Length: 206
Length: 306
Image 1 (cartoon, chains in turn yellow, purple):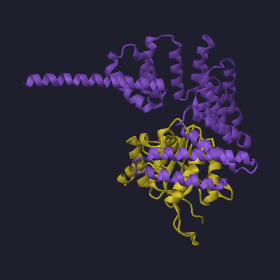
Image 2 (cartoon, chains in turn brown, blue):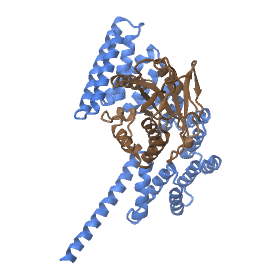
Image 3 (cartoon, rainbow over the protein chains, first blue to last red):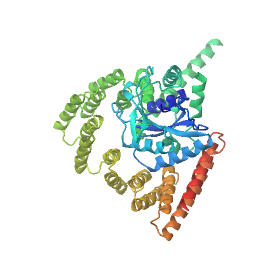
Image 4 (tube, rainbow over the protein chains, first blue to last red):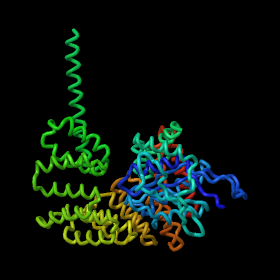
């Protein structure tokens, strides 16, 4: 049984806030996990937890240079903080379209080169509600060079109840207005893509 | 004594109300001029303005109705959109501009066929109505019919060759289809007619970079540099200059002179990037982490170049 990633509240929350901030755009971003100390032989051990999410871009996702900058910069930041880039998420421009595309597969593959259990996540905006009553993700695991969609019955959350409660609360409170993605950072370097204020809000509500 | 104080308080409240009203009206105007799509905020401010201060708005009210209606459609506030539409229909019966808004409402309700008919009726009366034609293309886009949207937009641009918004939309459609060559062509049109626009230069450079290959990389570097000349605070252009110069320098095909020149460009860009981060990170504890990460990233890339 392969170790597959699970999401914490903070990771899920920031993903959805990013999509909510730009409902008329495609958005994408990265997921990071804590670096594992040693590779455990016992594959029934705990699944990898994606503890945080770094929102990247909104609008046109199919251009290379800024994506490369972001990947390199965030990779460096990860090393500092003992994290590893473990996944990629994307919400397409059209609500009804939540299939992976060339961009998501390319970035996903790139991440999988450095992290074999990498996941590619597509956000299903058709089920996106303020109440967050159900998880709206389609999670793809990298398997023999292909992306295989995870069964939606698999529990992909560290604590779904907490994630649901907190994400809903932050959406109601319009926290997405203050969410910073890498695009915002490039517009003004003082904008912090680690989103410390939102992280604090999440912790506060836990 | 009490009555005097009460009167003063009354006047104070009135002044506050006037300030609030003018602030709201000015905010809406600014968002209109900047073409901001902050629809939730527009609905918040606009709805209150319309409900509480309609009488003070004068003729501004009509353009505000239009602005608020479009924002309301964005926020699924059909109730508010309908109200605005009725006011506009009453004031401007038979107006093509209002007809187009009615069409947009149908689009928001995903009644694409009805919307299309609405636009067709506008075009029957006025075949040069560009707004109606562009809305029809937007419908194709909303339905995921990218190839058709691209085809229609190309046809439109043959007739209306100066429509910059359309050229930009077309470049985005091509980028999403990964047809970078044609996207570049659209951006070239935009750069020709807007030589001082640093954003077009920078986007063109990004497209060339994505296309790949040594020639395109060199072009991208030139246009990132040009964007910087037009606006030395464009961080994307600065990063882009760094990335393209670094890649060219690291390319085994280039001769020593080219390599040396690009190493120089990359080094200059590194300096500028570090400076920009130092300036931005001044005083903020959180951003120190970013500064360090950028320094390390630039250092690690220097190694791959040599």
